[in-house]
Image (cartoon, rainbow, N blue to C red; front, side, top):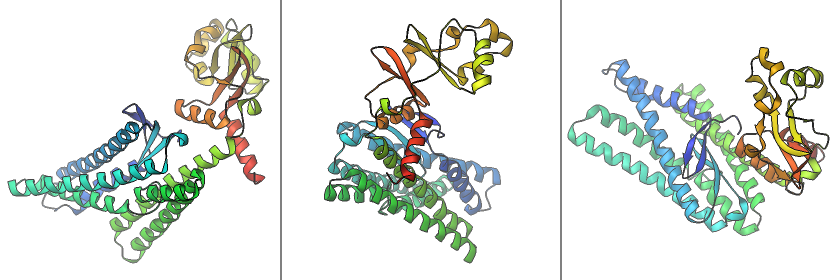
Length: 370
């Protein structure tokens, strides 16, 4: 999740773009270029292919806008949406949602897909009647792709809309959100694997490369999204009963604002390999220094630059308290794109929690079957 780039916000919700979109853009563009009539110049077909890719991305973004609007209107705060080529994977706080909310969002997604597909078809019908053959051909391609997309979402594998329906029904039947999510995402992972295998077989047996890729790429995206969901559930379950006090490093590296950057590098970083430092004054948090802060300063200025000039000040830092759950801390780290958070008690630093320590804890518990 951390490697996916941010592309902006919709209704205040941070949108991240998954790398499957790169493959989708290339695939849709190549499909239009190779399948469009050769009578049209190659440059024109490339432009049409890029246009089809952008229109498809716009349609998916509109769909996510609708779903986010419905979620927020129902009082469900959406923290982040990772936009896969198959649709969005929303991060929603479990306690704010209900099975009926989940079912409503799934139905809204299915309906949105069909509305967008029929809208493309309506535009195509108008363009054909007005004689705009080239643009009509492009919209015809988009109509076909989005109708396939709409049908794809009826598959009961999370995070597809059909998978959200499955999770809502399992959640209502068992009363266990995490268990319902694990089952629905496992179903999505298996279906994604079957689509990948099917696409490869189509390419090998029939030599229909585009048909095979149009099966394999959505399958890969579905499998990736389902695995990401499964990992989120595993992390939440493993860390929910753990607090910051349990996992924080009490002997965190503390420095003062007056220390020079050159002295810090020579005496601490090059000797211990430490990559972050908490800046304090009388045990009170003043800021934090990481390798990112240090690398911004030219080496010739290290000896003349005090830590106070390069640190990230406390006012801009995310901090936690000793009894805060490790699960919520990891959520905050993901939300802010940071890897460490100071732990405060009465405004004094008592330790620091790092992403590496949380992930290591989860792996250890998994090895022990806990």
